[in-house]
Length: 483
Image 1 (cartoon, rainbow, N blue to C red):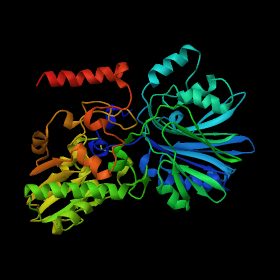
Image 2: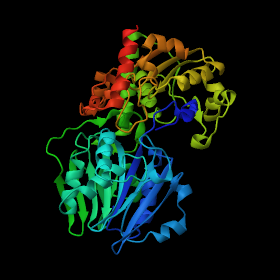
Image 3: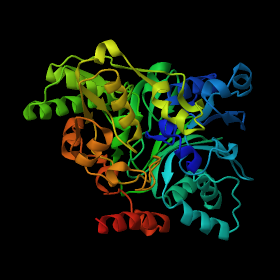
Image 4: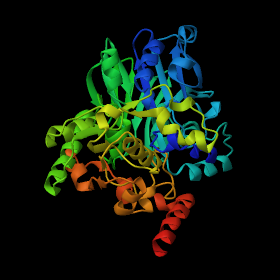
């Protein structure tokens, strides 16, 4: 979880973060090197740590560290990871801190089996399972919920595939998981389909990834999704598909399309860029009906650009690059004082005065979490001479926390859980503010197989049986009753 100190650094944490990304290679020479490039393509999914495990002649070697892929891995480390089978991971911590023991892959050296695990998502019954396992004698090395998977497999009975089935049948939550062992690679996706996972053919083998954008980097072909509740086993004889549960559904996290995924990825058959363009077009139609007048459309870089393009296309209002992003601030920018925190937006974003001065602007952003960054961007544009700033959000208001691997775990940190749109507009000091409706989002994606719990509180799993979540929910009830 994010520490209180980190939460004060508004510029870095007034945005959504995903837990991680996974990548694997089976049956291709220099698998570790290919995994490096795959993780590089997934770097947007996690920047705190990364690691690769490779298998050669029955032995698993692992190398991992804190930092970006290009910082952790160099030629010397890659050269030591031999073999034609490998898995890798990029991490952003939501369950468990960013200590090195929580950086993946996680490795288990059992008498009957050696295996390594990488996991994207969050197990919502982790606390309950951990208590049960500790009572049975399990000793945990770190605080990550992913380590529970190792212990459940260790305590299961039967061959390794049977052990995996028994272990994952006990998990509740969101996960895309890869397991590397002497039998090959097992790819497993949660039975609600909350996190993406797919695979593609490469030469005589396969590559597996959280997002299909990595397939394009490595020239993978014939991409296919791992289905909710499915186990895909990559082994010497090819692919074997199995299931660890029969009851399953499809509730892909809507924020994958809105914010997390790269625009060149295809997730569950939906191209991310095209989905975002469609949301922009939808917002433009709504504004045309209301009679909004504007001179230019700008997007907050980078994930809002596609929606801004769609808005401009539908409205006929020119799309302009009114904001420039400094790509060299990111995770290493330290803001120890209030004055430095207030400079955060100016360090990360700059307004082009010659473009925005005197203009009525439609500013497209993908989401609002805590609101402080959006407010500062509006201020930035107005200080650059913008006449009006109309904020349009390419998603519904985030009113409920996420427990599936996104770092919004409480109502307190969500400004839309406290303020309605009119109140929030005044807080932002914008001239107008509009969010998308859930129905419009679903129509834009041409899919109702989405998890929209952060917008309406209708979770895909039985969350409220767990104490920490009940306490969070009671805060919301108390807040509502005080109105």
